[in-house]
Length: 174
Image 1 (cartoon, rainbow, N blue to C red):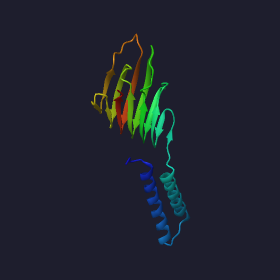
Image 2: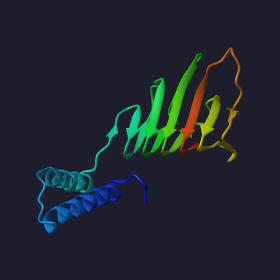
Image 3: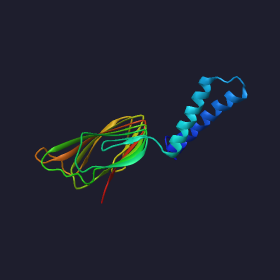
């Protein structure tokens, strides 16, 4: 179970809300503020438990689990308090350098790459781990990794990847 999953956070908010409500009722000293805060926390917990909350678009996954399938490269992709995949396996590189930034912050992420596309990965981590396609890890440091032949007269994909309090794993498709 993910630490910031909807069920876990929902149970936390429900528990805190019920405790606040019980405290308000059994002390017979009913404080309207405590009662209101307790009800709001319980309702927020129920909302998270049944509906979840979070956000995902074509560049970001925040507080949820998801996949971003990339066909047209954008400049930055973020996975924050989440678990997600950035699928770059369908990216077409012509005679230009396409630069991408992939960030995981308090999250677990995967980046799927096409081994036929020349790629330069500039990996750095702070209190996190980056696992490169050859299964080597970058922890509290930075490292460059190349897939294919990279030269200035042909296009390639340049990825600046960072993991902060999380894990980012690079995988190549077959």
